[in-house]
Length: 153
Image 1 (cartoon, rainbow, N blue to C red):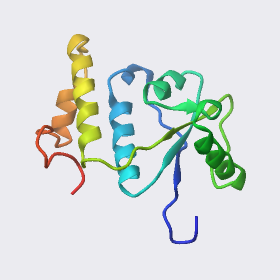
Image 2: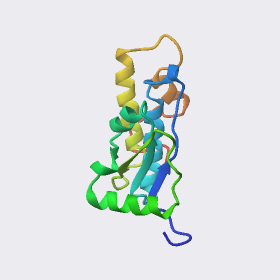
Image 3: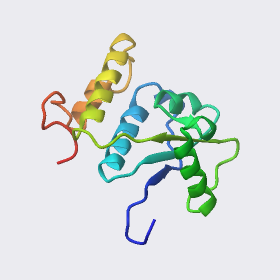
Image 4: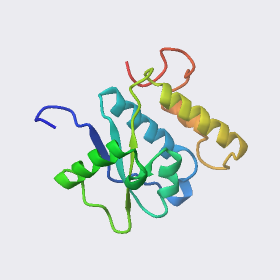
């Protein structure tokens, strides 16, 4: 990308949580925030380096290995990787990517992710920590159904 322009591809070099905090939706909500923000500024794809234990998370988020990405996206990502601007993969990781949709309604992806997490956690409520609904309220996402919902103006 020319100096001063926004990148067409961004990288999430690492996204991790303590084992005891996994499967509670925190990573999904954080990913939704990153995705929505990236799409809103014109980023076209996100690249990650997935560890063996994180691959299922990235697959659930819609990521694919480069070999399974659409050919045009895979070609662009390989060129970005070859340019050296992305970090070197960690040991035993696999590069995975996702093409981003055009920016939609501000806050819609985050709201939808919070609803999905809330419905998942309702059936398997943890006896400790915050539920996803409580976490959403703590972050100020109380009314996610209105058109003005979301973290972006």
